[in-house]
Image 1 (spheres, rainbow, N blue to C red):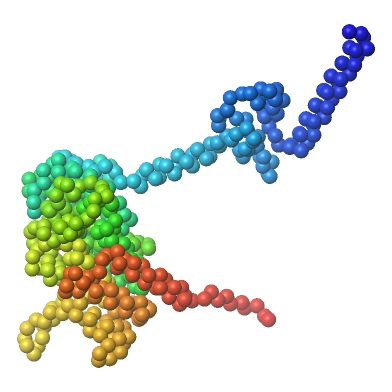
Image 2: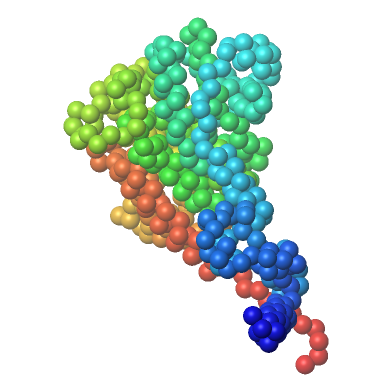
Length: 456
């Protein structure tokens, strides 16, 4: 090749180098925050290598950072892929950890020696709680703050059956139910271990022994919150556990409901105690998750035919439960209705007063007084209802909502168990009344008024 040809080739190479340099300068001027590492990698990589290379992983893709403030910490998504930032990975791990912490844990079968050690051989001071008449102790078991209830077996369970039943009950998880952690057996007694929830029972909140004129549930919305939480908790127990077992609580009463601050949320105690103590007979084939088998009338009435030993609280027992001693979901609905009337009036389910004329005691039921309050045959319903509802609310409540809630509670305490509503229907009605109460509460709030002392 001649000298002229060599000179032409050299000139072309020089021209190409100048064009490449000017292109890089233009790119740098348009993107001043591009990192030097990304520039060097982009310059040394040829187009052919980039197009023929295998797909790169998230960690191998170079990152180019852009930021309005001039920082280079924000990740950049280029055309070849994305690189996950460390902040995203940390947040993902945190969310997964929090989700795992909320899932139900496996049930614990405690050794009796653990229970004895935690309670100092049951010599420790018993926990002063009105949630149950059975002995209970607050202690620490396996690093958790728990409360241990001692109950007597109505029907003895073997350890394998107890373990299987515990695994079924501990799958149930609801915000309005106090969680069962495990159990232990010794002789004729079973020790049920529940998580400890700091709060006061509903009966103590409604009836303060030190000051009868004071209650922490002094607003209408606080009582509607308790009613809504209790309705949804019992609806979950009856209908939404996702298991073949149709659970019966059998211990619904105001002293078995814990009210927590500051939002006055209610949580149901003693879930699963009726099944584990043998108060409700459960067949082995009922254990497990829901299947697609069609339901039969015999199966739907299995709890009506089960035999239990008589145990209940005066005032909360339905007529059929008093007659047969068989606990059903309908008897739970009856007890729930009594608690609702108790929540509205602030009175005990049963009261006895001395009649000077007959020189004897006369029993007064909260059910009878509620029926008289909503009976409009001999006067205005509004006037009688305002007189019947707890006076510590200071007459500050929506009268239409209070009347509808009273009627729902009276439906729950119907004498005929077949005419009592299902808890799913009751929870829906109470949720609607809660929303109406919320709208009423927002409408009566005092407006924000500002006062200016400046001259006009």
